[in-house]
Amino acid sequence: MKGERGFVVWLTGLSGAGKTTIAHALAERLKAVGYKVEILDGDVVRQHFSKGLGFSKEDRIENIKRVAYVAHLLARNGVVVIVALISPYREGRNYARQLIGDFVEVYVKCPLNVLIERDVKGLYAKALRGEIQNFTGISDPYEPPENPEVVVETDKETVDESVDKIWQALIESGYIPAPERVEVAT
Image (cartoon, rainbow, N blue to C red; front, side, top):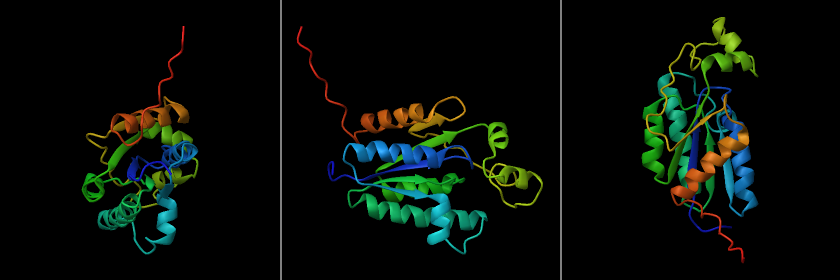
């Protein structure tokens, strides 16, 4: 395992923006160079330790607090934690940042019209028909990060390009070492 320092990469963005896909690609890259990595994905978290919470602002913030607490425990024990969670409210993300400390916020940005067009899970169509209440971006607000460490634009970049941006930010903030330069004899 590389180092003993854990940290949290918190991916936030609308449903379908690519948070889970990026989380898995980043996790594979980190594991390939020796890091212990855990992914806390919003859909999985809801099934296991946030069961019973609804989608009101209060319940969403409670969900973020629960995820932040688990991420904090893992990170302080040397694990790199990648959180892929809509986390629509700045208040919740700020709570997570304060609790965790070693925190890199990544805004997974994608225009709503592109997400409606993609609609992989059919959720936007249901929300637009009024079949899903409190759907972030349609009938519930999403507060974009004001100063994220990284912004990836999944309508303009490949997954690898997005992961490269995050990787570079991790190097620049000292969470992972820069690649060693090899001098070529001439």
